Length: 411
Image (cartoon, rainbow, N blue to C red; front, side, top):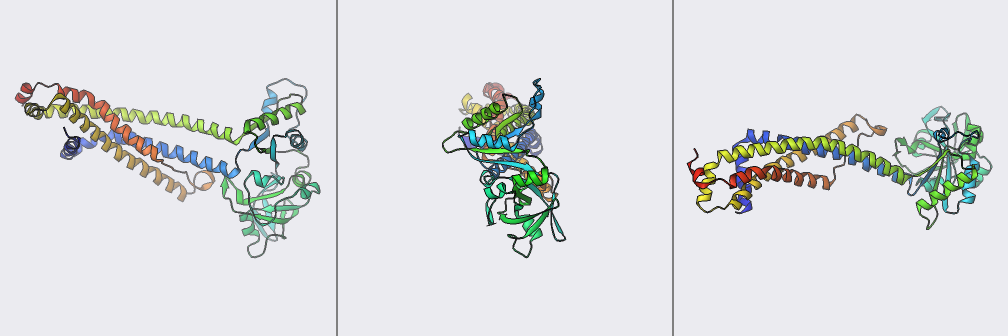
């Protein structure tokens, strides 16, 4: 039997019973739309996270002090924390490390002032390699230099939003701003970068790490140490050497965590995968209900069309022909429900993303990202068709096994 004729016949049956068809496809529509909505949210989040990490730079090693690691062992000696001496030791002893920079948070100052104008700001003490590690580009002036750190110079590099608010009509380079009661001279302006992991990178003020420690913090503590493998060195090898250097310096006392952006991204990916499996299981239940509904309706259709089946067998239709006819009808019903579910799920997902953007919800007020990949659309369509085929096997086999004489006598 011609498959196109079977599909046409199935579509005709759908049009002949619109209410029953709608109720039959409802489970498939709900299941597929749930899958599409779930994939759109999860993949959107994954896509946004990958973009955020790409803004921070690639192959970056992150070294932090974790006091919880010290609590796991009973030691009389304690580590003071991650310090500039640790950073200098890693720089001198780890030949596998290329670019390296500390990051010193200045939590006591969150505003920058120029004359009578204030701007929200995020000051950080950094080193010259910070621009390379974090993919910052200088648009005007220059970045921080070794001389700035050596002399504790009161200089800074500012983000674009700081420039717009404090220097709307005048050149920023060469001007002065006040941060935490200390006057800093602007030596550079960064290219706009936007938000990164919830922080607005255009509101940062980068000053020499030594200036931040001596004039703001009061001690040589370091928040984070960032590093990058040298040329031809793998990320894993560089991480192992950094870990070994820190352990050797502190007599194998625990307290430091050496990680990479790749590992953090993989951990987030695993969490999102678990989230996908949970939501996918819920959607699978809806698809299961939809498949049972298709099987029930197909059984009703076989009963209603018993005489038609007898006529087809009388004029030469084989069991195989009837089996394929009803299987294709079930697949058509399920695939039509799948298409409707794809449209509904994608529409709801993008509508939700638009609403959250308008209401400035989500991370950084930019809304919840939505991304529906092509593989999800194709997979949902073919899976819904497969559901129809699977649950249509029994009704199709029942139709194919009917005795033509008994079928023709059916009223």
